[in-house]
Amino acid sequence: MNYNNTKRTIFLPVLLALALAIGIFMGKYLPSENNLPHNSHIRSGNDKLNSILNIIESNYVDSVNRNDLVETAIPAMLRKLDPHSIYIPAKDLARANEPLQGNFDGIGISFTMLTDTIMLISTIPGGPSEKLGLLPGDKILYVNDSLVAGKHISDEKVMGMLKGPRGTVVKIKILRSGQKELLPFEITRDKIPIYSVDVDYMINNNTGYIKVNNFAMTTFDEFMKGLRELKSKGMTDLILDLRGNSGGVMDAAIEIANQFLQEGQLIVYTKGRAQPRSEARATGKGEFETGKLVVLIDEWSASASEILAGAIQDNDRGTIIGRRSFGKGLVQEPVSFADGSGMRLTIARYYTPTGRSIQKPYNNGFDEYFDDLHERFARGEFEVSDSIHFSDSLKFTTPGGRTVYGGGGIMPDKFVPVDTSGVSPYFGKVRSSVYKFAMKYTENNREILKKYTEPGELEKFLDKQPLLDQFVQYAETTGVKKDAAGLKISGKIIHIQLKAYIARNILDNKGFYPIWESIDTTLLYAIDYLKK
Image 1 (cartoon, one colour):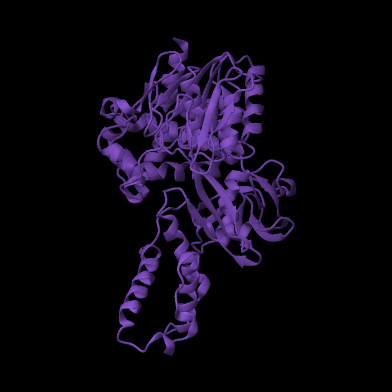
Image 2 (cartoon, rainbow, N blue to C red):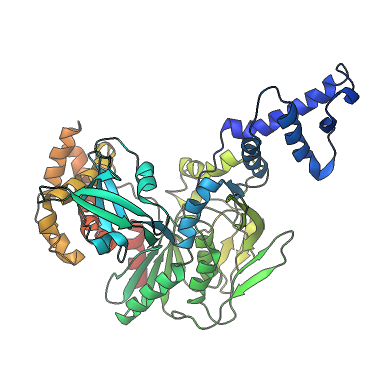
C-alpha cells in the first residue's frame, strides 16, 4: 500500500484554493459579479467544493476533466487526517482488497522471472493450473498468442495478463523440460486462495511453530487447521510468529487471541469520537488456553499483529520476543463508492487490555511517521534495547505486575537484536545472487530434487553437494570475485540460504522454514527460552 503522494497530488488543491483567493482579490478590478456567469458566486458551507468544481469546469481557460480534479483532491484531503486514512481508485480497489479477502481471480500459479522468462515456481493446490497439469519449472513463452519471453516484462504486467475475472479464459504456451514442442493450455480463471499462514510444523517433539504473514478473512480457519494438526502431533508449546505481519482484518486477530485466553479476559477495545467503546472478550472456548506460548514480533509487525501481541502480553498469557513493533493503533472502516472506488477512513483507536494506545505520534508529518523505522535503526534501537525510552505517563501495569508501555508499538518482554554476525562486504555484494543461483540450480537439477518429499531428506542431499563452491563460481560470472575473508564470515549463512531457497522451490514453505530456522536468531532464542 503506497502512502506517498506526488507533489502534484499534495499541492493541486492548495493551488485551487490560492487561485480562488486571487480571483476574489482581482474582483475589485474586474467587471462586477453582475457581468459574470451566474454560477460564479460561491456559496458557503458544504457546497463550496462542488461550486469550485463547477466554476472551473465552466470558466477555466482550457478544458478540464472534472473527475480527474476530484480524484486528485480526495487524497490531499485525507492527508490532513492521519497516515492510514486513504483513498483507493476504482482500478486499484479489487487488488487492494485481495489480501484481506484471502483470494483473487486468476490461474493459480506462483512464478519468477528467470533470464527474462516467466517460470513457474509452483501451482496452487486445487487451482485451475494444477488441474490442467502445469508443473513447477514450466516456462510461459506466449500469453494469448503474444510472445512474452525476452520482452523485459515486469512482474506487475505479467500478473495483469494472467489474472482476470472468474470464468474468463487465458491461453498460454509453455516450454517444458524434455519436450521439443511448445505445449498449449487454455486455462479458465477461478477463485484462487491467498494463504496467510505461511507454514506450521513441529520444531521438536513438543514445540510447534506457526507463521502468520497477514490477517485476512480466511486466516482464522488456516490457523486453526495448523493448530489442530500440531496438537495431534504432540505439541504442548507454541511459537506464533508475527514478524513482518503488517496487519489486516482485526476480527481474525481477535479470534486467534480467543484461543489462548480464559473466559472473560479482555482482548481489545476500541473507541472514537463518533464510536462508543466496543470490547472484545475471550469466550473461554479456546483450544490452547494453557500451553506455553511465545509470540515473535519485529519492527514490521503492525495493527492486527499488535492487537494480538498486546492481548497476550497484557493478560500475562505468554512471552513476547523480538523487537519493538511498528506502532499502528488506528482502526479503519472501508467505505465504497458507486464508481467502484473506495476509502478506508480512520474511525477509532484501539487499546490493549491494560488501556494503552500503541499508536505512535504522527503530528510531525507523514514523511517523518513512515521514516520512523529508519530513525530507530540510526539510533541503534535494532541492536540495543536500552536506546528505547518511554515517558512514565505511558506506563501501564499488567495483572501479573509487569510494566508495559504505550505510545509507540509493543515492546517485547525479551529483546533480540538484529543479527549481523554473518554480514560481510562480500555478502553484501552477492546477497541478491543467492536467490537467482538457487533458482538456476533448481532448474538444472529438478528431476533429482523432486524425488525428495521431506525437508530433512532434501537438506541431507543438498549437504552432500558442493553448493557453496558452485555459488562462488556463479558469483564470479556476475563480477564478484571470490573473497576468502568474506566467506569465512558469511559462508555459513550463504550456504544455509542457498539450501532454504532450493528447498522452497521444490517443497514450498514447508521446505524453506525448517532449514532457515538455523540462522533465525530470534526463533532460536525462543526455542531456547521455552526449553528453560
